[in-house]
Image (tube, rainbow, N blue to C red; front, top):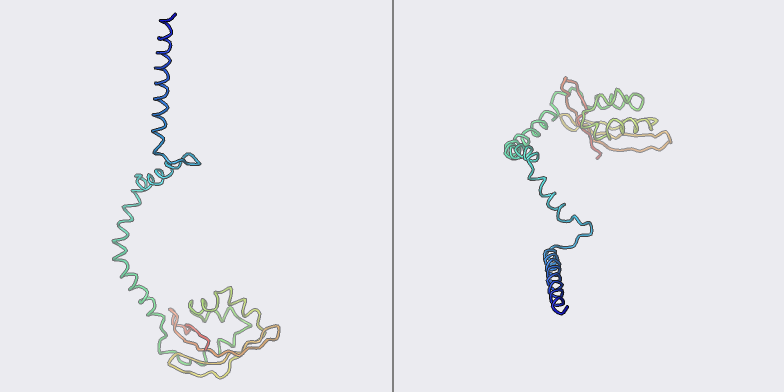
Length: 195
């Protein structure tokens, strides 16, 4: 019995050392890791890093590198395009009677806004709040009249526009109108501004 006791203690001691070593190894391996409430902090980071490196993303990338090179070359082309687009709209010098055009335009309002808006360039329609804003504005007016219309440049007219709302409110506003020519050769109001 005395001989068995040392063996039992020896086996128990060896077992404790093995279990203690395993626990120590587990603790040491977890020491370098930061705790994550969700338990998946490291995977999302590596996953977010992984998608950019994946071959599917590599397919769009060849297009992207080509774009910067093309963009560098396209930038001058794009810069050249707006001036070209801006050059056609400038009003030509062959508008026969700018004052009569502006008078006729306001003669259509507020009764026939559909015919009046057809005499505006896209720029002037945009300045009016788009088609919706244009029709809403003139739909609320009872009368529009033009006074003191005079030509101030080759294609420029200045005048005072009087607006009378359906509620009876009257306003007198000075404007400058710049006339131009549509692609089909018609005279149009290129732009306007309040003075």
